[in-house]
Each structure stands twice: as C-alpha cells, then as structure tokens.
Length: 236
Image 1: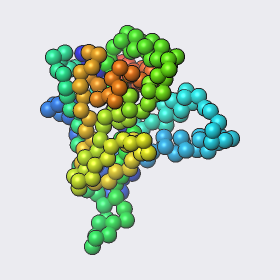
Image 2: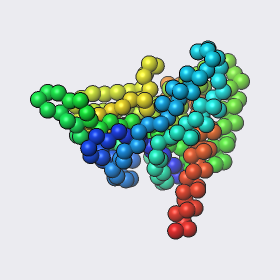
Image 3: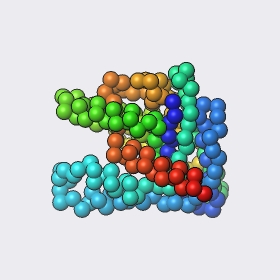
Image 4: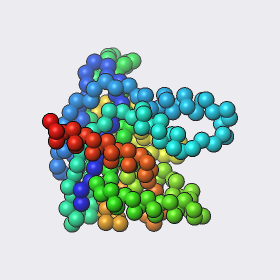
C-alpha cells in the first residue's frame, strides 16, 4: 500500500540549524537541515481562544481546522510504498542538535524544535472517503467521546503513539495535560512511533482499536497539497 507521510517543524534557531534524518523501518527517507521557522500555530490558537466571549463558549471544530491550515509549519511530503506483508514498522525522526551557549554549568539560549505535524495516511482517496463515512456514523453514537479522544487519532501520529527519546535520557510522550506537538525541545534525540497493521493499514497502537477517529478535513487538505506539489514537480 502507498502512504503519504507529512512532517512539519517549527524551529527557533540560536546559531546553527539542527539536522533531521527520517527513517521508516531501516530505510533512510530523507536527511535535511531544519530552517528557522518560529511557530505561528500555537500563538494563533491562543489568540483565537482569547477572543471568545466566555471560556465555555462553543466554537466549531472547523474554525480550529482552518486556523491550523493557515498557520501550519513548513511541510515536507513523502510518498512511501510499504509491502502488504509488513505487519509492524518503526517510524523514527533522528535529531542532531547540540546548539546552545552552555558554559560553566549554565545555559540561557539554545535551538528549540517543535514537531508540529507528523501525519501518515494511505494515499488512497476512495479508502479515506469510506473511513469518513464510518467516522460520521460514530459521531451519532453513544461512543462519540471515544471517537473524539486524542488517543484514538489513527493518522495524526504526533497526537497518538509518538514519543520523544532524548539523548540526555529525557523522554516525553503525549498526556492529557501535555500535547507533544506543543513541546519545544532542545538537544538531540529522536521522535519514535511504533506502527502496527490494523484494518489493513499501518497505524499507531490504539487505546480502543474498534473506535477509530481522524480529522477528515485536515487529511483532505494535506492530500490536496500533496497533489498540487506533485503536479508542480512533474511540470518542472
């Protein structure tokens, strides 16, 4: 099956750009320097929520989706071909980053990185539409809270299944009080996600595998961006 991997970093560079190496299984997919690109998504989100007249005032999820689409970090697209015989796979993003003014036990500045986007989904429009119909049915059921749960995101793997393994021994995973994509991380290490075959697709491990959820508008937007990118590349 073909998959589309979409990766995007926000990065505050102190002196030197960090280096990223993306591995799918044992295969090196890409190696590149991460440019200076301060986050605009989280500040825009906080400003949007401040403008609400009351903290309990509801807002459509489509407003949040549109806000992210306008403020996402620079994105990289990778088309992957995975054999159907593969039942598990490791996605790993190694980071080489030792840029700081550490001296005599003190440090006040360093290069900080956020993995604000890491999405992996089948490159199959028909399959995505079928999954969307299943998701819509789930919205009308008594299990809606499970479908909306962050831990049941099947494609947005930075929200589900991914963890940071720091070279200094610091490990970070998603929790109810802390979203991994909001964490500014200094130093070297790796973002790691274990993928398993479920429903015929490679997915992160799910808390409730029978109750899947994904953000169809966001996935459709990334699918369209990839197709536009592919058409531009073919015309060069």
